[in-house]
Length: 329
Ligand code: ADE
Image 1: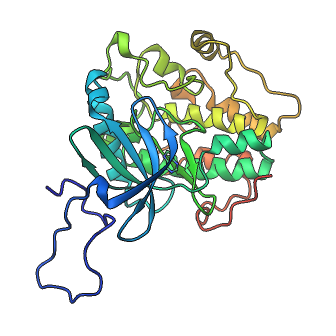
Image 2: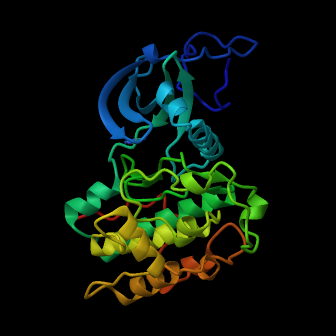
């Protein structure tokens, strides 16, 4: 029964009675253990609700998936990927939404996630127009730091975008939405990029991965040949840095097809006044050949070549998650 991770589920175990000699197995949770509130997210295959644990009063974000829909669209693999990736990241203290437990009923699957109170990074970019340089630098540093942790575990996100980057109650960033993640052998992920096998779960016709909305952050290699490389997340990092500073993503067009064409031709421009250090870093991330992107050949668990880029001058990499984030205004 306890198919959930061996991590602290929002537990129904008694807290005041004396501890019994043998450990109590927490009972599997059901939807009745929560009071469901407002809708906070909507994807292709799921709906996210704010929910309150009736035992602890704690708030969670519960992702609900209709089984019929998942089966009809053959997306069982996405559900498994998301659960596997989030379980692997559970003990990473910062940078990721946490999966506390999962359960199901006849019709639906439920993921009980930490509730990122301040919502999507995208809303903040859109609200203020564009970030001041110190703000963009701080969030780019938190994002890079989270990517380092994720890649060290062999996880490639493959759908990073400001909608999937959430902000917790202290305005620290949390990456969400691992439905399109690829889990690789951590030894394999930082070896020299070689020609890789195509993902057998994707075929020629369904190689679109799961584009919800416009795929403005997808890397050329994912469009071209489905090569799985952690550097696809670095391409997305480049797009997100560009967007935090300029207000809009670099590759924009009226249709998905035209956006793809722009990405493959690297058809983008920097607006007037875009800071030189930021421009230089973005240009080193948005490189067609994924093996030539900055960071592509870094060894070890950190992206030293990216960390030491002048754009990040002054960032205290060791304490980034303990700092008070600069105010977005
Ligand atoms: N939207 C989707 N997932 C969410 C989460 N974990 N917290 C807040 N909003 C969300």
